[in-house]
Length: 439
Image 1 (cartoon, rainbow, N blue to C red):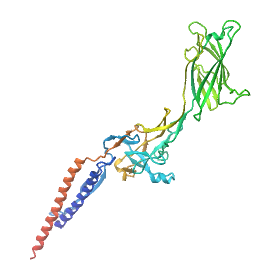
Image 2 (cartoon, one colour; image 1 turned 60 degrees about the vertical axis):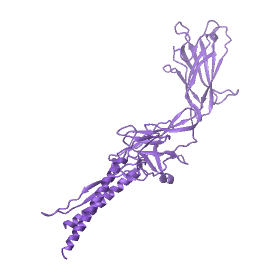
Image 3 (tube, rainbow, N blue to C red; image 1 turned 180 degrees about the horizontal axis):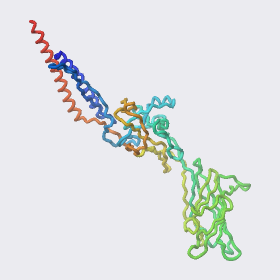
Image 4 (cartoon, rainbow, N blue to C red; image 1 turned 180 degrees about the vertical axis):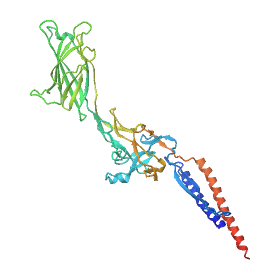
């Protein structure tokens, strides 16, 4: 009984060391695989109860585990959508098969790194077929609220390389000097005109036409102007002139110390003058347009000085339509598109997925993982928030394999395997001696 148990224990030792050799060979073969997590084999002794004076060898059994919480070093790349997680958390991905089926049910897989590039449909996909998931931004670039314990808010990240973008103009800042001499008695009362380009909701170029007409008194100086604003996109009258969208009476200060600044603004048509912000709001064809003419008593905005009409400064927001030039992912997971007109837009946000027990995840192909009961339920964090780290673009995570350490364990495994084989040989010889007793 004791001799045969020794034989069984040594056979178990051979099997255990063969398992360890398999994990070592897997680790070494994946020493250059990005995002690979090292597998380890743990040995556990088996104890069989024996009677007094005897002992039966129980042998050994093994358990293997993937150390997913171990992270490799980050290396830089030249692709802006090469992503790696620095710290805790994993990138949400799904399979290209589920995206191709397009039935709305994409399984949630996790990975710590990936080289994602647009495919023929624009989906950011790795060479192994993992498609990056993210939360789509609203039209204004903000990220809506989405469930953090579900994948309902996640969609495959899709980049249209041929997309266009533009921003409508919603604000115009005027800094114009009107000639003080034009409001004196005897002047011809000649109007001054100014045209300001703006971009409508469709990115087309339009114009706001400003006409400044002085009030000429019989005697003295009125220091008063009438500002009429017309929109080139509005309806036209019988003479072919666009309708008035705003008309205001401008009164300028003529006292010492405040001369030339706005003293009062009266509204004939259009939005009322806001003294706190120095703006008026007119209704152009695409919606409300805010025009800043300056606060009362301020030297910025509209002024009345000297004898020259001078548009000092005209600024506005909005841009014409531009083409996509590049896409990058920042540390907080925002996917930003850059256009050749100089604007940037947020298209998606990539959350980081965290589970209580990372090593309890199920290991799949392509360095991807699936949530299991052992890992616990997942939660979607904003990158850099809570326990999670951040996202690094232009980077990949190297394999967590230490080749020198694996080779050392390989020597130990080989010696242990040889020792177990030697025990089997010794038991065989002892059993042979037992057989020879009958001769």
